[in-house]
Length: 165
Image 1: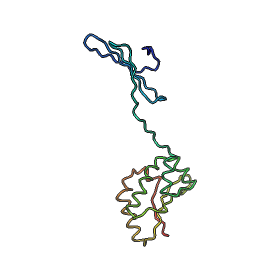
Image 2 (image 1 turned 90 degrees about the horizontal axis):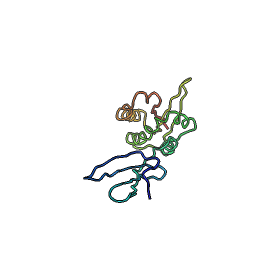
Image 3 (image 1 turned 60 degrees about the horizontal axis):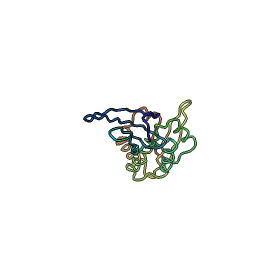
């Protein structure tokens, strides 16, 4: 039989129904993945269980990098840069689709780090076989339609550029 003097009880609510007092207690147990409800009323103490709401785990930076590696070649220096500046990863995941929309394909994309003395900047390199004028027109469209909407602070860390192959 359950007792009312249980550890980890978080909530006590009293509900008055006609002449009887019902007491509703709940306890969340993350290890068990459920919430327990104890109800006292006219009948002896009853115990019911409900599944706790599903908790969604946020992907870690390493997991996001694994997804990003499907769209971009990522060297060790770029990986280290992204782990330090993990706020860039979600944007880069979105960028692969945007590059595909702008250039018709998103193949052989690569991330490279460029050192500027004490500071570093990440470059997302888009290889293209297009003529320079046509490629620059597509890059401008990419910038205007998507990239320029990113916050300026992010653009200080990341740049999209073309590589003619």
